[in-house]
Length: 575
Image 1 (cartoon, one colour):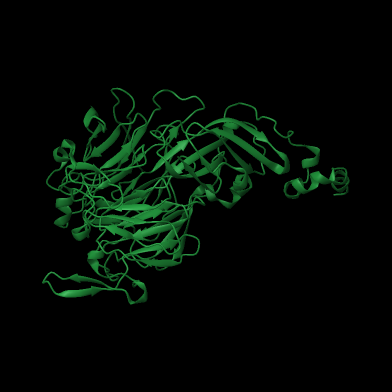
Image 2 (cartoon, rainbow, N blue to C red):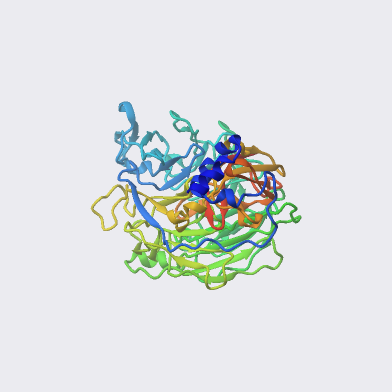
């Protein structure tokens, strides 16, 4: 210790303040000084990720969310909007100040609904604020406005089937609703963000069309027919909530039942049809999962950047009909991957550790995937599934073949029909909902679920905290445009030896319902350099996505990932 104190006294006084925290953690630092300010990290191969024995941990974060979370969206203020169906005319939280909404029962009798069917949920405190939703949002869709992070919710059921709703991220904001905005009924439809920041709606029950979400207050006169939706509906439908993704070539990938196409919106023309994904059906009520895998960018990108889709789970085409008779057959266990920007691409099969229907597939800050929630038998719909799948699965898209899946610690709470999840800014997973009953039933075999959990994936193991980057937000770029050089400064106890050891990931938070996370998208940014600065602060210089087609405008969470250990996310906006 005497040698350490002597060495410390020899440091210039202005140096002490910047190094104080670092020296406290590493008393030998004066004898092994870091590189000088601005010095470059060596280019080289990435070192392996830090190992952890953790398989994740679960925490019951809130015992009462007020409403059963059928739909979920994280806002840029870190609040989460959750809502269910107004048709139930009940929840566990009432509208404030004695507000009630009039409605008529099936016999035409005038009644009052005084319950809230949507809430704003604080992800830090668990506090719940009731929201007013007049037109039924049951089985609707949604996404965030690129301008200010407003949630646009579209469609629903009954009096909400052609509605567009808006709720901005503010302390007192509530839903603003336009009941006749859409041309076609959008019940079980999919909404995605386009390159121009607008929204596209695809499908819905008996809606074999697509249309654009109109400007606020306007109404669409007609929608555009899409033959795929008509062709892929079967006796039990199995093509609702189609999987829709914006490809990096500007076309729209649409998957319904077991078939997929690329649609050119400008020409209203199918430019490519992919091979059938065999094995069964993948969309509601078969309810598989889908994600656009992380898009890998470079400082200089190819003209067309590769894009790859993954589809997992689902059910046999007749599973819904059999479940209605009390026979629950095993869900699908396979996954298909296909590179949609590659000519003559074919599906490549992989197999999950267990069968799953109604699961959620989330992209984690690390660029890996998490498969969570759902059941092993049956399909979506009330009481149409059995054998809850309580075990989350971690998937590494770049791992060795046949070794990409890893089972994690299970939850104790079944999350089947009408369950949801979301990746939070701190890297935890918010898990809520599950209601297999037509109404709020707390005594059923699988009761209406109001408890909210947080799942901490293995990368949040406390033993990894010493390797966790911390973004210095005041010295980092938060608003930028396409192709711009952007800077992120961060604190890290370790010394980054190669820029390959740092990954910059950019995640668009999705709208999740019925096992599908709409608008989910991750970019892994190209890096120019990683340098050292004073005070233990390091800097990564990256390049923003090259175009709106690759990354639609709007709000994203930026994470810095050091050898598999992610920082807390930072909200950014690209326009």
